[in-house]
Image 1 (tube, rainbow, N blue to C red):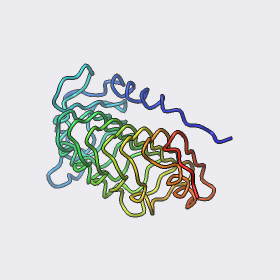
Image 2: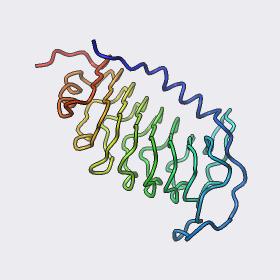
Image 3: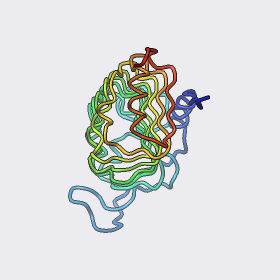
Amino acid sequence: MRKRVRWSWVMGLLAIAACGDDAGGEPTTEDQGPATPGCRSGQFPGGTGTLTLCGPGPTDRACMPIEKFQGYTKYGGDISVFPGSLPDLTALSCLSEVGRLSVGQSTELTNLHGLENVSKASALELLGNKKLTSLEGLKKLTSVIQITINSNDSLTDIVGLPQGFSTGSLYVGINYGLTSLDGLKGIKVTRTLAFEGNKKLSICTVKAFGAAYPGVELVNDRNLDEKCP
């Protein structure tokens, strides 16, 4: 019997991001090393907890305006971003190193432009971004421990990851517009591939994709039920 992945935990991630440790505070201009041109040098102050950043729009979250992070290159903990009605993530254009990076519940983002300088992150989460159609913008991020792509209804294919991108685990769930996995061809996965609840994504497509990863656990659950050849 195949092991099933339960996607209720993803909503838990959203809740955690919304009320995580308030590691914010007013940024400073303290110099902590050689600066990247156009960017402040060093780490954003405030500890190593979860830093929650919000764009414009109504919110009931305890968060810091995203523009206050602009210019900083590093953060020692995790960052959860709720862009609101922002059309892009240019406020994070200097960010290069972070722990878990989560982008959720945007109403206008169609891609991830603004994250071009992110080269080091432990995990990437894309959760409930209404208009997201591409993962373009991650050209320096070549590996993460885990990537989660959940409830992004405008995704029809998962395109935009850099050539040779690698991850331990890839979780793709409840993306109701997803029909193809062609954009993922060539990525490296070492541990788990999980596709669950993508109602337009054929189980046959998932099965064929998983066949390219012998030895990697494949979860193919509650996707479009079809009779495979």
